[in-house]
Length: 420
Image 1 (cartoon, one colour):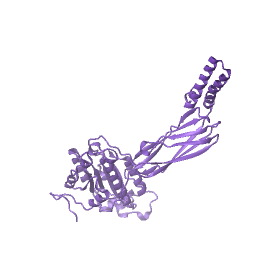
Image 2 (cartoon, rainbow, N blue to C red; image 1 turned 90 degrees about the horizontal axis):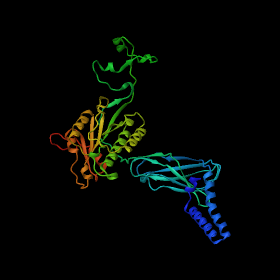
Image 3 (cartoon, rainbow, N blue to C red; image 1 turned 45 degrees about the vertical axis):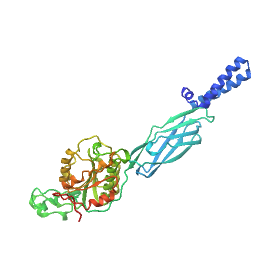
């Protein structure tokens, strides 16, 4: 009852105040008829509050987002399915959904005729221009009486995520490099000694076809050895994104970091479409959710884009190098970097020596600064260290920069770059 009285609307409070005033005036003036009117005005909001407070509302909600992962700039649709299992009718429901500011204004609906056993649904679109993970909800429901005297608020605590992946730019095909790596028994191994035959066989396992027994190796080691199963060869690639705060300029969607994320997303989607097994590495190290998964190209690209949707600017001052291990040696590495400082140069040298092919898109972050003056960026230094590098400013097109990267050769002995 206390909650119901606190839910009196402006109309309900006006009825209550008018009734009390009428009763007081009637007593002072000796008007018995006016007393009855005043009592009626007081009783109506009180009885309504009692009835609403005693009602047992059993509302259930199912929120469905389709699709749950959407590229930036495209719309998703949210459906709210409600059901009333309470014993008493609720009348009208006023629904308000909490959504982040980036997805637009809060949707509001009024649903009439909600009785016991009623179920229905409403839907609304959402659209985000900025990547990220957004939580839809919670939803609040305002339950009122037919007279509009009392209004109670009920809230659902559940939320539903919506992932907005970065925008991608279709990239043209260019000459790429990187070592071939296989899966299963056909993974390449270093030759510590012996011949190639020693690394193309394995121990006999129960159930192996005897036609696969390699008799020469079996005689040499004294045990049955069989030829390894042939597995398709794969090419591995690492997309390295420098997402440190100090390496970028600008704020929000117009910052150099957001441009770097778009470049990394475009490169990752392009490489997976060309058959590469791709992993994502940031300034904090390797992303465990994208560690060279042998999935379908579309599935792998989806994981990479979802990981890039969550990338945030890091306060790190140095680049993590734990991902530079022997397992990934010789793979293609595509780096998307901002402003590099002295300590970063040694790390980039290690990355270049570790990679089978080293390509870099170096953002000229000074062009994203307040003065917007291009200073050349880090592309020249990367060229000197053997990278195939190209600079990028806010006015450059990403696909054209990628096309130019295909023609760049490493800078040696003062030769900036050459086009064949």
